Length: 423
Image 1 (spheres, rainbow, N blue to C red):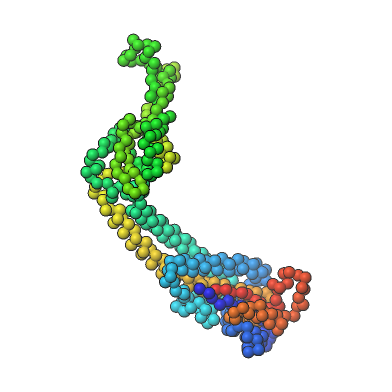
Image 2 (cartoon, rainbow, N blue to C red):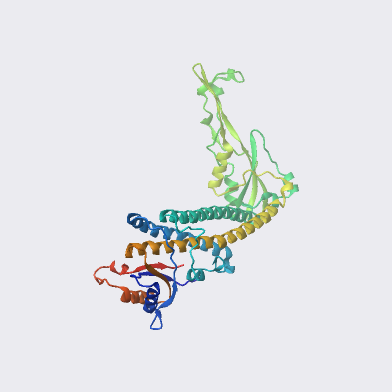
């Protein structure tokens, strides 16, 4: 949504009545002979001045604070628009459009006491907006996580055998005919394979992980008399002298297929124990190697989908659909709540932004025109495409410094306070 742009301008009253300054500003750029915009009086409260050094320091900080608060206002507005989609409506400030709020601005003395030191006042405003930014991050992250969970549930529900919840597609009579092991030494895993990989998978399954398992043992041919007798072989035994795959021969079973993929079961060795041994008089304990995880990693590298941690449970059928419905309700509720939050906090952030603009006008005016505080500020609602003409008209009326055409930065300086505002 496009919004009009504004210019906030102040000039010194030079001891005359503020009404005279107001008329000069109007005649300069907002009258029939200079129709460059619509002008509104901007009431700047009597704020605490402090020292010149503190004002100069604050002037630098205010520019940064202004930009930070603007970015947060934009962020809240963008979040609201994205949440609402095509149903997006213009956000309001205190129940009125932002343009009306700007043009009818009145300082909020209850929220921002004007007799507090300026530095404290700016800190009060910026900390309030920072809290809004932090809360938006937390709410957006929570909403994003819930959306991701919903998308994942939808992917599983509508996916093929590589992603779908197997409890929703497997029939009990099919599972009963499968040889499924889950013992101390053996584990049956479900593996989904795309149809384009089926032929290769069936050929190589029994050789996959051929370097994982050590099937070697003592060389009994050298000592046949010791066969079956307790012997202390220790480090002389090389289990990995003979290696092989952890897949149990003949265990591959085809379970079912859909349009895209085929589901198999295959039984593998869960782990392998590397025996302990003696080093002199000291016994070094054995270790157990997890073959299942290593074998699953090899399958994943081949782009075979290992359906890990799956245990068939007929009572779980349909629960994924219920979970998805629950997630959808939660996402919808969070979207509604976050939309309401954005509408409320956009107004709060915008009010803070406008107050920072007014403080900037006050500080810049005091630095430019000196003490006692005596200036008039107005707000120009710039006519479309006429900002340059409006600024030139103000320079012509109130400018006293000759411009140097060779100075590229000279165009930024004016003999009056000028602050752009593009809500």
